[in-house]
Amino acid sequence: MTSPADLVLTPRGVRFLGRRLPCTIGKGGLSAGKREGDGATPIGVHRVAGMLYRPDRLPRPVPWAEPIGPGDLWSDDASDERYNTHVRAPYDFSHEKLRRADPLYDLVLITDWNWPESVPGHGSAIFIHQWRRPGFPTEGCIAFSRADLRWLAARVQPGTRVIIPPLAGG
Image 1 (tube, rainbow, N blue to C red):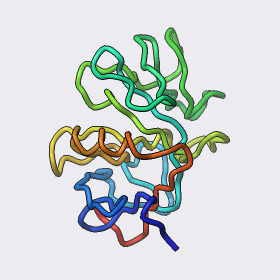
Image 2 (image 1 turned 45 degrees about the vertical axis):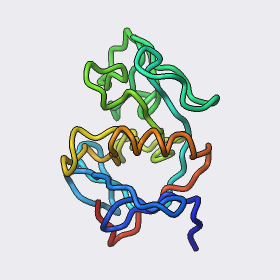
Image 3 (image 1 turned 120 degrees about the vertical axis):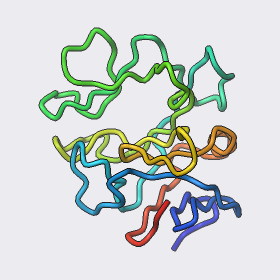
Image 4 (image 1 turned 90 degrees about the horizontal axis):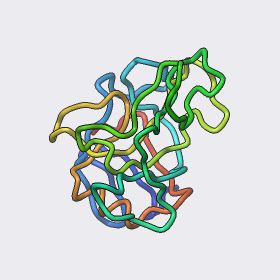
């Protein structure tokens, strides 16, 4: 059973608190068997586990949001013991920079996909972040317009459920 306080992916966007927000999902569609690099958005019930933001680009959206600094990275190397975790530069394993030149990660909701106990190869970081443009797919994350993402960020809490049903679409 879902609640209005759940983020629920539907074929027309994400339903949350009585609104339906347009979004994009992974270029690999939806997957019940998510793997690293497949570009898919994992089916299931996930939870918001954290929030990051760029303090040089926007004010702290909520008190529990953590700033993204110049050396902040996310490990995406399945051979790394810190796979699918927030790490800091310098870092020898494959990783993604959290402080990007573009605005995609100015505000990031971190889900608990394959975290905190990650299984190597099952896919790293499923974030909720800003889209490039409407309809442009992600690498597996869920993306929204900047305005809708900021609206969401002001209303979600740690533990908010992110429900991705098998027949949903973005």
